[in-house]
Amino acid sequence: MNSRLTNILPFLVAGLLALFPLVESTFYMQLLTKVLIMAIFAMSLDLLVGYTGLVSFGHAAYFGLAGYAIALMAPKYETISLWWSLPAAIGVCALFALITGTLVLRTRGIYFIMVTLAFSQMLFFIFHDTKIGGGSDGIYLYAKPSMNFGDVQLLNLEKLENFYWLVLVLTVAVYLLLHRVLGSTFGRALLGIKVNEHRMRALGFPVFRYQLASFTLSGALAGMAGYLAAAQYGFVNPEILSWHQSGAVLMMVILGGMGTLYGSVIGAFAFVLLQEVLSNQAWFGPSAKHWQLAMGIFIMLVALYLPQGLAGLSQRFGRKPVAEAADE
Amino acid sequence: MTDQKNLSPNPLPAEGGDKGSLRSQPNDARPRGGPSTEVLLEARGLHTFYGVSHILHGVDFFVRKGETIGLMGRNGMGKTTLLKTILGLVRPREGQVKVHGMDMTQAATHAIARRGIAYVPEGRGIFPNLSVRENLVMAARAGVDGHREWNFDRVIATFPRLGERLSNGGAQLSGGEQQMLTIGRALMTNPDLLILDEATEGLAPLIAREIWGIIKTIRASGIATVIVDKNYAAVMALADRSVVLVKGRVVFSGASRELCENQELMNRFLGV
Image 1 (cartoon, rainbow over the protein chains, first blue to last red):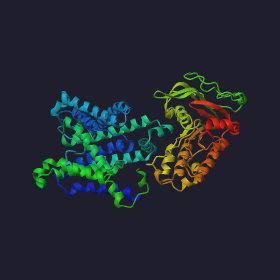
Image 2: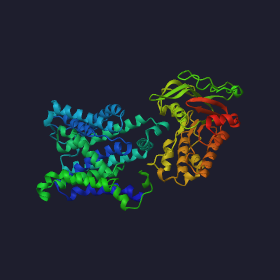
Image 3: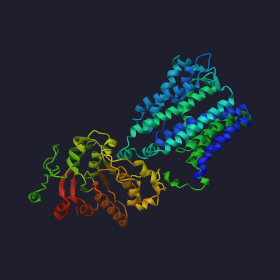
Image 4: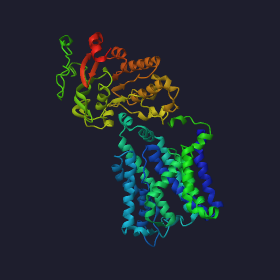
């Protein structure tokens, strides 16, 4: 792909998506909102998995924590202001990631996977087995967050298309932020760490600090996604903290192609839409109940024939990019 | 193990007589006073273990500012272990490592590197997922006292081959180019001391010669270097001082010329 095209393509896609509410129905708009939220979530995980070389199997912890943060902070019969609740929820997740990061980053490989899983399961059981946040029943959020400026309402998020646009803007913002971060020396250093930590240390890079920064940023962005998910459904239960959720987002990253931000977005689209299609009873009848089977087969096919994920398709059929052979 | 009187002023430690002793060996690896002998790196009495195997037996090693040192010895004698111990990649059980006079024995590797030591590891350490330019620019920083003689332009001027491949991925380079990239990246950190572990290993003779030429240039620029290489002749031709390791002990430390001219030592320690 030529680089001019890659530079404007995300904006083109975002522009098309922005027009979507003008033509389509409520159902698909909600579905697309969900896709975009998962895209933020997947991009945040890709920062860890694809760029820092840390496979986290507990990323739902940050997603769910932010969801609970907004649900618990919100007053019962009023709306909560987005201006402070979103940063607060992100901050809680960043802090939690910073603390867990200092512990889990002492492990590597399979142990890292297990320890991140353990932390997210701890959080799951805290919300599942105690009365905080309604226990296993979960907790409702009665209204969408408000975006007021003084007494003036800037955007009524109760309207689906407004909420959709907000999520779209945040998705683009996260993409641009990560794109910027990864293009900096910091991002190059993360890529170096992914390949060889010792080598980076010998070059004078404090590897642990870089990893912790990446882990914290990743947790914070997962928190943003979790906040939006809770706001969209108006309901939070321990399921959003479960390892299924961690697995799903990991699958989106792998499906889309690790180490390419747009791949994570593609992965989120593919995963959520495929899930929607395969579990559609009108199309698949009783077998729709077993949509996981078809999904599993699809993921296996991608893993077999597209080791670089769906993002690898553009490289397979497009012109070979310069640094193509670089991926081992 | 007799017949060592004629070797002064580099008395050799008696081999074998002190098995199991952890005391450091008497040898010449001690900086002597005098002008322009600022010591960059000083390691004393290093004992390093891999698990239960005792690799370094009380190694003393030092590098003065701007000095070129050939670190020699056959395979498995502890050369790489010594370098890794100096860099904190492996911790010594006993002994001390000082960089610029500061004790760095327990310091993190990155902190040691930031005291002005650049390590070019065995087997080429490029990052295949970064382009040539990114490999270089990523490492850029000022030296210990803020000097910045080595920047991107100077590195490219030193390695014109790299200049032709700036946007190539690291893995697309030939072995020689990868080695140049690794050395170039090390220079980007503006080190006072460059450690080259088997820099010419596995390279075609012509390319190896090119690398030696570059090492000469680097030496002339005033950067101290420690060279580990199988090509003893080339090392000794370049090095001010040679240090020979046998089974984790320093058995020779002195002017390269002395070692070079003493066929018996060459034969005994290096097998050539």
